[in-house]
Amino acid sequence: MTRHRIAAIGGDGIGVEVVEACLQVLEVLAQRDGGFGLDVTRFDWSTERYRRTGAFMPEDGAEQLRAFDAILFGAVGVPDVPDHLTLWGLRLAICQPLDQYANVRPTRMLPGIESPLRGVGRGDLDWVIVRENSEGEYAGQGGRSHPGLPLEVATDVSIFTRAGVERIMRYAFRLAQSRPRKLLTVVTKSNAQRHGLVLWDQIAAEVAREFPDVTWDKMLVDAMTVRMVMQPASLDTVVATNLHADILSDLAAALAGSIGVAPTANLNPERDAPSMFEPIHGSAFDIAGKGVANPVATFWTAALMLDHLNETAAANRLMQAVEAVTADPALHTPDLGGSATTQDVTQAVIAAIRGRN
Ligand code: ATP
Ligand code: MG
Image 1 (cartoon, helix red, strand yellow):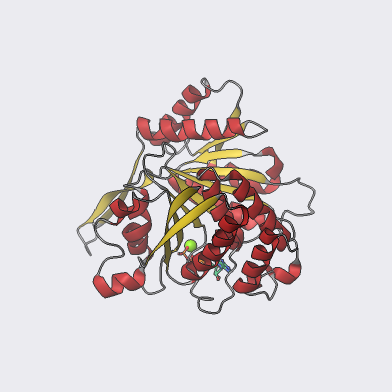
Image 2 (spheres, helix red, strand yellow; image 1 turned 60 degrees about the vertical axis):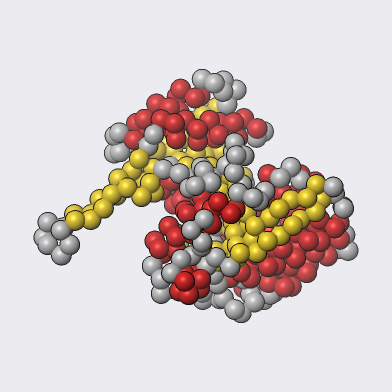
């Protein structure tokens, strides 16, 4: 029997709640077919740890994670600690050394979930957004000088390397090729950002020659937001820079219904280090501790993780169970307009996995 070593990092706020709910579900799923086992190790890396020790995780944290097959992550951040500290102190401190350069966000409307696009006659939405996750606008380059003086300067330098753009482009083309419509939209802002994003356009055209069966087009990011709302069915796979895809995938999550159901995978496609799977939402302190966080995003996230671990049957079984549950409005949490709790949803998904409903 294959055993998978999973590192579970709940983080802060509802991150801990949804990861614990997800581990309950994964345990049942592993028992269901007897096909695989999970060895779960929990890490308390969080803002609470930062307050206690001055660090979100141990100095060799990313190295410790190399011993695992996958990482399940909740969310990090608390209202009174600046977001950039938590982002660089934990999430990017894991993604960057483990070279998880492809951030992949599937988006579709789950049964029973309201979407601003449902019933407006613009067709269905079934997208995968690929976000460059290692460089670009979030390369961390830049600085500040002359504090407080009129000539104070703050710069954020975007870094686009040929190697970095080629590998994300190739990943996106390969993903588009594996999907039925074989359709890729490459997003830039190369009319205004005339160095890095012109390189991005050029490399798209070069890599496209390796994938003659993929139909692809280019969009400027501003026009792309309009197309996502007005012609959702015209899109399939999308690739964009770190910043642009960050913004587009929040729009995508809203169009699909709720941030509480949106998953993401931070992939190391070469598999020379573990990949990390997380819901796209944050730690949501407005609802933390109340037991009402929607765990569906994390369940879907776990399905992506199982797929990555080649447990395809279990991933499909999990998504079928999740869809059976979202189809029932009595099992919607408050973010979806219902009154179910995290545990109501979790137990219903477990029952569906066991085949009792
Ligand atoms: P971050 O900076 O970490 O992204 P944020 O405050 O910008 O945090 P979230 O924490 O994602 O964003 O919360 C945004 C809103 O969405 C909040 O009102 C929160 O309650 C709601 N929300 C986010 N995730 C969920 C969830 N899983 N279930 C229910 N509501 C959620
Ligand atoms: Mg946010």
